[in-house]
Length: 238
Ligand SMILES: Nc1ncnc2c1ncn2[C@@H]1O[C@H](COP(=O)(O)OP(=O)(O)O)[C@@H](O)[C@H]1O
Ligand SMILES: [Mg+2]
Image (cartoon, rainbow, N blue to C red):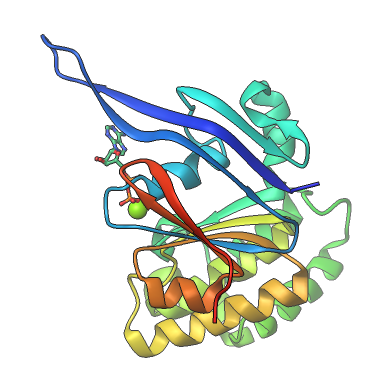
């Protein structure tokens, strides 16, 4: 069974006060993602990539269509049911600072999923150990734990975001242009780290970018988007 199955997904935004018009941000998209696979989603700015990502995690509601996650149509779930499911799916945004609480020290941010009990009932010592393990996995040092996001570079903060996501231990990740805000040299490091984490943790990923080179590098399969539709699917990536 596919981990993700999307059927005829649509998201229309109403605009215009007197003459009601609709922006068809997503206009009938269907695709699937196999377990352990990275599907690249590529297309020009404004074609609907971010909207697809947000719909898959149900951060926004679709106009119509179905989104199956592990066999469950999440468009039909209640708020409460969605809340239980949500830790299994996480999103990485372009700007790491937007997913980190500026008032929280790095260590607290990474420890939060443990503290909130998302990983079951584990002792404080146990989660301290796990935080240290995660910080090492993403290539940061224990001395970063006491700092705040503003004291770290963009690349370092994106590493923090990755550590925090690994602490949540999701099955599925939507990465929306995760390196677009970073310096070119740092981009390559973060992409390599994401590849490593993906295979080490057996993650399934939707990797979104406007950059075909980056998508090619990261993906097992590519879906090309144009004006809210998937116009092409590329399987053999060399
Ligand atoms: N909240 C919104 N209200 C109205 N239009 C929106 C909204 N969000 C996105 N759009 C429109 O939907 C289209 C797709 O946007 P987006 O998914 O952000 O594209 P991409 O990520 O590919 O650049 C764009 O035309 C955008 O202006
Ligand atoms: Mg976008």
